[in-house]
Image 1 (spheres, helix red, strand yellow):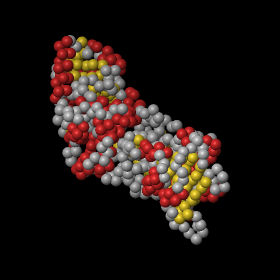
Image 2: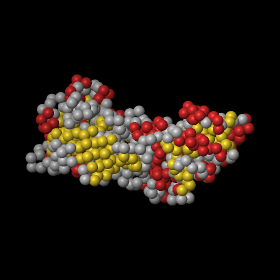
Image 3: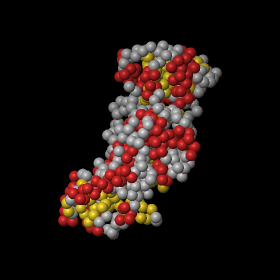
Image 4: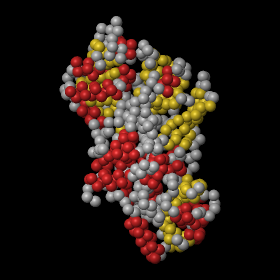
Length: 346
Length: 274
């Protein structure tokens, strides 16, 4: 554990910028979003406020990305690699929940059989500087999935705990260690006092999260609830707007589409949403998820049953964005309470 | 395989065979320069560049260097565009995707194939492969039907290769006959129950429109077939083919990577979203 004076954070950012383009939370039009660091003094307010409005997902899995280009005419067809922006990012100030969500994206995009190369290049080189949560929102429920809101995360490289005048830095990977070694002249060793402050802060933050019960055997319970009336109840409220999927750090569904001008064209990949009615509609009109009931059920079960069955982890990190922004007040934490409440006495 | 799994290879159409009299099903024979190897039941993504992509089962048998065959029914935007192509035009192909029919699990068993319409396309390579490995299996029977005699696909196999082959019994039916038709007139599931094949030591492999599959499975259960001896293939909307885009999942199974071949036993535990 090392200490860096908060007013010397620029040294850390400058060193990080040697590793790639640095992105950090920035206040923009009353919204805090990950934006490119331009070498200016970072906004502590943006770093210390609740989580960013959007997760950092698009830095690894861009909202739109070119897959390939082609030239097609009567005589010939040529397909060329796209020109994706696959430079790895440095993501500074990412919260533990969002950092944990990257493990879920890794499981999808870096599977053994068909790893996606552009994601792999960005991900392999990416640096994550995680930032301990201190301003917990009432929609946060990351401990449900075993995430420590102020603690370090497996996917991270450096973990920062903000003690106002000082930042406590912990290397959580070898690359993180090297970066901190290079900054030695600006760092001091954390003494017992700092260590104690970190420990008590972590505990206080953990206790401040009013969280749904642990998700231990949730998947097994849900496997028996495919025909439960709860799906109709939730679907009745759902507007099918797709905000939940757009804001979700673990949602990975996408569409492939194209644009053609004359004989030249491009095929691109862009985010899509399982909440849209045409998402699964087939040529000829058949739709295996014809109503909101099936679509809501698929989204919730994908997070809380299917992802767990397929990958061994839940596909939700309890960031709470879908709860905050759902126009119909559909609440996944509340849903877990209901399901677990029916299942146990906690 | 290409480095980027979403990037197709270019392949020239070398032959187009009309399958049905109304012209709604055509078999596209395309070169296989990428030389990808595949097994019966697997699929590939066909691209009409500038229009889109669709997942189509590979209806040829894998022979080193031989062209690929895709039998395609005209149902939507991409298949419409495909049907407008001519010999010499080029398409994009990527794959193969999905699991395959588990032939080794069927050793020593009787095989009952039940197809409807274009559903014979995925069954064709597995029937041909089983005929090549004839000694591995017991009785082989195909029950196949279409809306009308003109809608029966793969007539060269139905009336020549398989009809003449003592190794497989072929029973044809149509929903509605015509003046020249002297065969059975019945829906496939009804005809199946009428023929009432023995379920003992028999695997039933069925493929066709969803409604036919649904009633065929019910008929097979009434005939005493065990749930894990009922094998079917599913098709759902697919975009990526590599288990990521989130369209074709049924529960935790992705049709593009975990399917398209499933047993009824497997399908019982997932939501009825197929």
